[in-house]
Image (tube, rainbow, N blue to C red):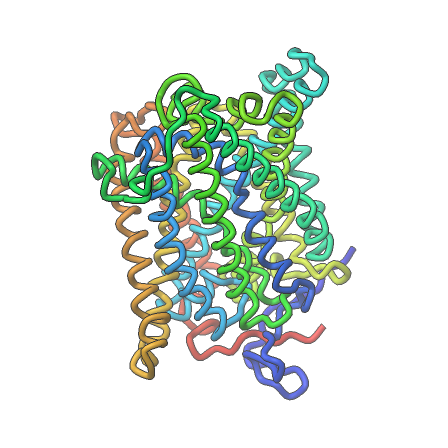
Length: 524
């Protein structure tokens, strides 16, 4: 099957419209499937990419372990910088609805090198989280199989490294294939998977509240508004650790923006969808956190959320006690659906970022090709799938500690490219900030505040990573492995950028993409 070559012709026109937005306010794209997604579909993609049920089972306990009963307050605190950055994404998308999102916008604001590194941060963060999602989905697949059959030996197959890797690669290949077939196929699967996980999560919350009111568990707590006070956290170190986990729980909503060239109303719909996704997420997290804390408490023993023996997978511990043996299986299904759904949609931002980088000559031209039938960045999607499979396989075979530390380094990448994008918004619109109070706050004050908050978390995380006790506890020449991996991945991006600069000098001379460059208009 041939691919459609859509390498850039800056200033090209379609129907007499030069670049940027057409008469209907929609962006002229790079050959992607225009109008494939509406407001609801875009919001569903954003929620799916975040994977709320997966995030809750993996971080609810860890957050409670760090900040105790202030866990709901930390969820709100993590929501604040994400909301502020979401305003930046919305404003930038209105002006430049380009599927390259963070890459394209930071190039226009700060130039090709900072923009390239911002794009690299998004790509490498996505590869890491895709690997993690595939691993979690694999583990829950075998865990669910063992629960359904009542045969522990089947569930134990996940401990067989070869079986685990083979299953993981199969899931990655399946997710790649669905993403390759376009937004229509992706959207149909997502409605089912997202609806399932939110429905089961709602059932869990309702049953947890019921257990709490009945006083079923001795460790349960009465609700207190003090839980919403972030200043009641015992130490700044604990607050920062909890905040880092909270920020991770919201990461991925920007997938709504990566589909802007495929969304009806490209200039406005993705921004609205991202805000809808954020509201759904914060509501789900607060309801689940409060309900679980009221039911079992946040202690470090028994069913307490802060118990280190169960904090890495809270729902596995609470499914039976809260929902019973039969309905409890639904919670395992929801976690599997959450990880699987996110595995599929997380391919969207990385593939489209690579497409944009290639289109603007920041990466090899072969990735700037769109499938003529499915209207997807076929080669970029396959590349992301192959990179994810290879990364996970190598990391798993080398050491489980290395894989764990790589996941811990993820927060560094998230804060890196989100904060750069937020600052890019204020700089890009700097000439418009005095036009109105709205422009001042939504294009300047809010993005800068969000960027500063994430930059502070980035620096604090960087300092904490130096300590060998951070992550798995392994070291490289006395330095924490998480620090070496996090900084090493950013340095690797710098090396690749320098190599690319020799092959694509025009982009790095600022001749291809500038602030005045119109969005590419390509005729099929």
